[in-house]
Length: 272
Image 1 (cartoon, helix red, strand yellow):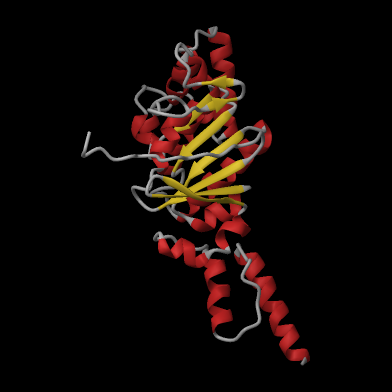
Image 2 (cartoon, helix red, strand yellow; image 1 turned 90 degrees about the vertical axis):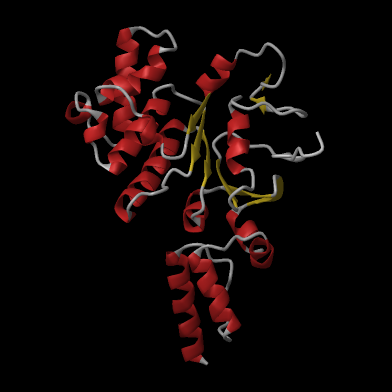
């Protein structure tokens, strides 16, 4: 059709076992659309998507099995909580896999503990009585109870206060460490992306324009600025210091690295 637009265009990448991959891009760049292709919610008109050895775009591929292996946590997942108790809500996914009630209970308990919610404390509570951060954790537990090999999170820290924000980041690290899964997440927070990711994908206009380590991607400040993106705050600080004559590195991603580099610079300057 003449008025059709390509939501995703000629995107090619591979993600390897054990990686944490951050996806960034301006609003409307195709990030969420890309995520929904990765577990078969959307299917491309052209091209293929391979999960392990399975081409999920092939006709007849059982999507139930793919969604069992690929867990997708939507933005603001707490809005999808609906059962009377936290335990029942988290049990919804594994119960629909046809598992025994004993296995369902075991998975629910394990998933809640994994996200930092005490089983005995929350299992019989209404999910609507939890705090915002606890609701987010309970919703993520519902996906983890499916034991996905690939965990996909769309803006996992969106709308949270600073304390809950830090807790969710720590939880993502913990889950990844314990489950050795592939973790893919979308974020507008460049500091989060820099801290969590092994690799960063940058989307713009439905295209993948950068694919590399956080150091490689965030070293291209001008290219990121051209598509409406910024570097992490610590990186931006180092660029500003350098522009004002300070001989500091700009391949800095975190506040701790920035602190160490500024201290080193001041020592060098004092010794001259």
